[in-house]
Image 1 (cartoon, rainbow, N blue to C red):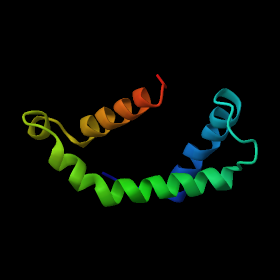
Image 2 (tube, rainbow, N blue to C red; image 1 turned 90 degrees about the vertical axis):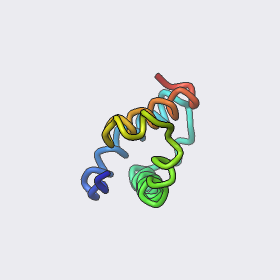
Image 3 (cartoon, one colour; image 1 turned 90 degrees about the horizontal axis):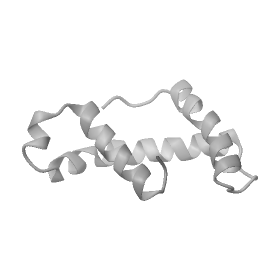
Length: 85
């Protein structure tokens, strides 16, 4: 899995400021810089834990899917847990 660049993290953070503040009704005290730091922390966690995530996946899913499919499964599951679609 590729590590995101600062520019890519900024692209993620900008729309999420609007979504988190406007649609989800979260704190209006968050800035793009705050969200960039949160994206970086998330990126660091993913990098540190990707091997353990892949290790717990059951066969045959683990060996018959590429990194993109594994990422999409993780993201979809996390979004559903958070009540997002």
